[in-house]
Amino acid sequence: MAPSTVNQQLQVEQNLNPYTIIPGLPNDLAAIILIFVPYSHHSRLKSICKSWKHFYSSAKSVISLRQKHLPPFSVSPLLCLFPQDPLISSPYLFDARNLAWSPLPPMPCNPHVYGLCNFTSICIGSHLYVLGGSLFDTRSYPLDYPCPTNAVFRFDFLKLSWEILSPMISPRGSFACAAMPKRDKILVAGGGSRHAMFGAAGSRMSSVEMYDIVKDEWVSLDGLPRFRAGCVGFFVGSEEEEEREFWVMGGYGESRTVSGVFPVDQYYRDAVVMEMKNGGGKWRELGDMWEEGERWKLGKIVVVDDGPSESPAVFMLDRGDIFRYKMTSNSWLKETSLPRKISDESSVGFVALDGELHVMSHVNGIKSNECQRLRQQKRSATILLQIYHPRKKSWRSVTTKPPFRHPLDFKTAVMCTIRL
Image 1 (cartoon, rainbow, N blue to C red):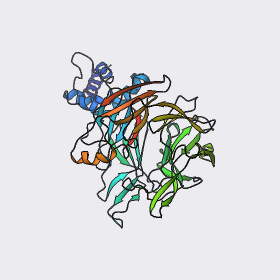
Image 2: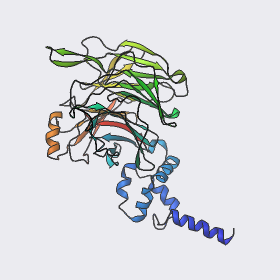
Image 3: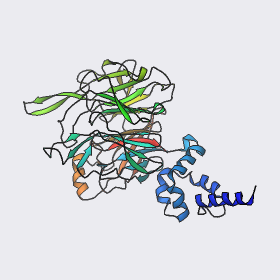
Image 4: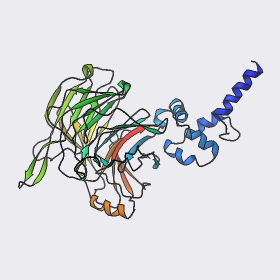
């Protein structure tokens, strides 16, 4: 090889790696060593030295090396959590395996809107999507009346930046949402305009849309059989098969009044299913999932994917008990109960991480109505995680101190999971 060619290659390597990552080791070997550090610790390691700051600031290279060299079981699943309005407050990544927190940049700010809530977040690959929600708009009248939004944002973990995508056809919040990562599709169904500040108000809708990630466009599908908001959605079946189905459970439709004054939601006890042949078909109704008087509404739902060849396991948290859904009988069977009872059952987080069910609550029993008082005092609260393994039928618990200086209200917090 000519000397000039060698000098050019050395110059390129010098530009890509201007610092020695670990003294005494080649940079390629040192890079492999550093990628074994959990992703949730990367932001803190940037302050060690200039070389580590330069290395971990190249998120695209770090994530590519982790995907290439790390075995899947060693990559910790991360919980992406939005504690408040993401337009003014940063979301966080939480590593339940290493009990580490890491902040993300806040979403692009819009000076005309505030109080975003009841939106949906979902992760596909190295991207985080934030869809819809309900908010207040200073350009609307009356000013104290919330309205739904059709805005869609995406955070790219490779570029560490947000971008604005094509908006949904219909503005909505409190809707069902699920993704087909291998087909680059996101489905949304139902929803309405309800805001977290109002207990029983807002519109309902039945429209269904599908987002094409590659084309950055939305298309309308066959609508739900009835108006439905506050529902959950998930897919059943392999993405390679034509039998894949989109399930929508629970939610509320029409409302009635008590004594002719107080509005009360009428919650659905049934589920509806859409076959995804040829991009979307007709809906079929499955009937009620429980008897009258058994419970008044669907609890918090999580889905555990047991593999491409098996149907997902669907679990519900309801008043301190966890139930498993039986698709063959369209019913819920009790799986287990929480070892430690929660004082405020309405404010609790429920999420699936790495095949385990995580029940999140305040360790000191803070109730939802106390969160505002502690928020004003800038006092945080320790979070208790009660973790259940469905296959081993075993419980364990850990505690963590969140980095934000206010108590987390699980009634309004939005969560999703990602692997990096």
